[in-house]
Length: 223
Image (tube, one colour):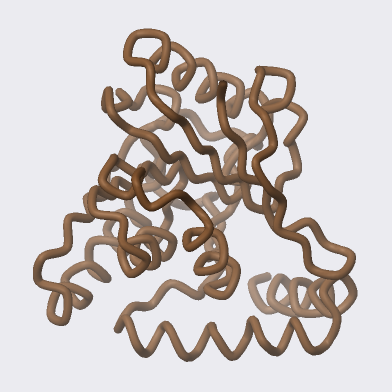
């Protein structure tokens, strides 16, 4: 099954991004897995994993986002927010948080519903800390809809981790947190399949990351 998934995503990328951009993404893939000393490139379905919440078609499989796109997005965010907590919903094996720390973010929290993925993320963290001893990354085995948001969290990252109903619940929690503790908010949504949910909840597009035929990501702010 996984082999077919890899083949599917490779040809999908060729179609939407073109050959040059696809091979650029693949080059970053090998380069940064080796540089950071981590293993995050596999595709993992949730069917047989231990989940913190109910199994649902709304919970999508794990796949690491492109290193190239992650570096591009994180380096476009305002430097003043990099001291505030950065929350990755559906963090999987932790790739986005390792990249975010390389880009200057200092308080990083990954939340995932699958215990085995959190175990893999923590295993990656042990290796990563050999070269990055001061790392402040934390991985939590938790249901995204039940996670208590830190009162100063400013950046929320989503790589299409779940469907619109769960997104709505998470957005509601973010908005409630902002009402209690007003602050700037940035939501990074990669492979933004359900971006209408953000826009219907008052989020404003800050910028979009596009690649030929493909909308890689949308960065939203909340006014």
